[in-house]
Image (cartoon, rainbow, N blue to C red; front, top):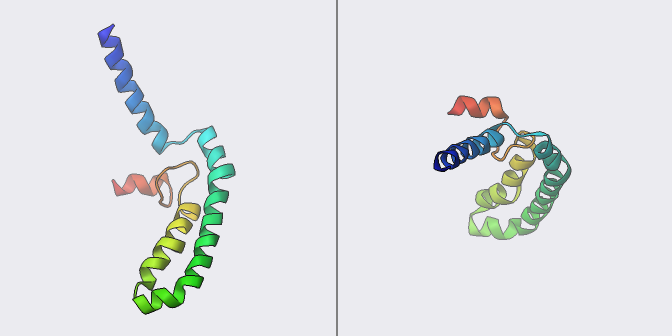
Length: 99
């Protein structure tokens, strides 16, 4: 009984890692239907907030940081992340090459 539990624990951790790198059908559909539209909205709202805050960030000298956090970061998660993946990048192939 104890040996079976440790084998199941090892398999479940391996399965989780496998799901993160190779998302399944439901992860891809959920990402396409729910996450991507929300991230696209966040990108649009962030761009509008960046334009509104531009005079203040320019005076403060942190325009680059504001643009990075309000526009680039949500845009990267929306358009660069592979479908169903949890990490941004150009796809699983490039992520495997970086390791």
